[in-house]
Length: 397
Image 1: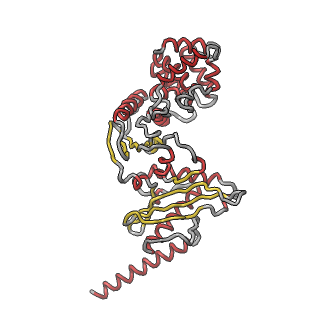
Image 2: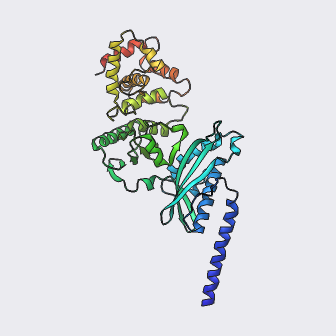
Image 3: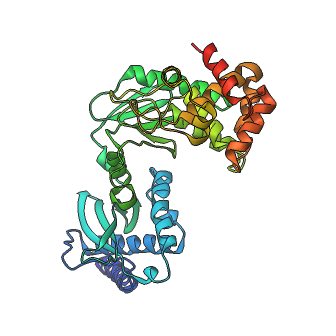
């Protein structure tokens, strides 16, 4: 009995040593460098499993693939979507930069018995003495039975957040949510889905004060291309939403989300989609009080603007997308407001069939395709644009 036990123990030891040896050889050719100042606090087998799988994951990214075997099952679709950003960056490198050692593991520490929090940095050479930081990126590694998988740090960073379901949406938040806004979003979500003939999905919605907070939940401690960006939200991605400036209503992009499921990319007309997103959802951005900006409010502001500047050419406003709503939010598009006014009339006269025709009138030559379809449906063209839109504005409440 003792002999059998000793043989089994020796076999296990030999197997473990073989795994460590084979993995160590692989890691010696690492794609991600580990400076000697990095402190490892886990056992040697876990360390080797984490580092080897980590390197293998990023080696595949460099080659243009994401190996799902290396991803933790929970939120794997969202993790894959986030890693797509890093993969796109890798694939855009020129022949000189692709040979540079630009990635370093700069921190690793345990956050549970079988989880490690990792941070890597991407840097670019720079003409000055200081290198340019491209990314500082975090992942959580989970190791079970010597197998390691990775996920964005979303679950770990929100582990103490509160959760409340409103209709089809589960909200995740630190303090409280505005239930009235959440109910408005749920209503709009269901109406948009119904209008497009889709069953509304169950969604997760994370409440964040700004876009930089969202990036951290997704793993981006820092992103060069997104530095200073704070007004945006994120989603719908893998049935997950991250709020626009801590607002519970994400109905603008729900329209884009379902449209993307229904229509081919080349058929989708963006002037239509934005106008319809303003009509059925909102203008995406919040005002100075943190409230979503409605199409009705913007139509009234457009009327005031035209009264103040009676010689304005409305078609020029539309074509050039002139900035006229800066006192509400600089990002608001007058083109989308005017498109929404026209689409509202098309919906009244031609119903959802007319809206569907507008949505699918083509991506190429977007403005021309849009005007060609408005002329076919309700007679609005470039020549009579000012007159017709003025009439629609007079009819609107």
